[in-house]
Image (cartoon, rainbow, N blue to C red):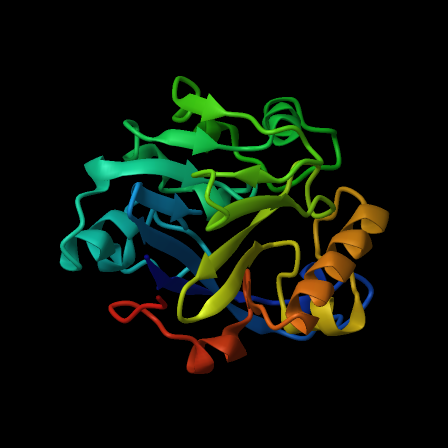
Length: 246
């Protein structure tokens, strides 16, 4: 089994307060957008897809060659062969290129689908135009608070990390050589969320977010490598594609 970590481009935010509510007001920050490919003996799995680089984005550096399908092809993988696409949640920077995998089965928490299609008035992260492209796809919809073992062998387990959104999930990958890696998504967007237990920005429930952060901190204490959703400083120490964890 191999896990590829892709750098999907960087975005400039004028205010870090967007990621750490009530802190760092007025402090600009550059964030990466990450997505992942897992080459499992039972099939290819994508975790999050980043943005659609061809569509352009006002805060993203959108080099078309960084789009997920093109990075996969450069490694010799055909996007049409992806078996599962696991989405941490349905905000635009995590699903922008998901429409490129119409043949895959999507794994999204049931309450996340409901929240995205009928969001509360204060929700600002969902984009109807992007969601509409995914409307007719095939979905597995795990219940909101249960772990979901993708292949039934313990190697890929989706865990409930709600808080940032109502149906947020993270993925625990258990590798023979590298050990456990947790693809966190936006349950912890930047390091300060994790170390200080600060709920992430655009947060559905701060109480649930802190519970999820405690769960992630426990996994880290047990030796797991946590890859956060938007922590730029982590890129220097991560193994990025074309290299991989195994």
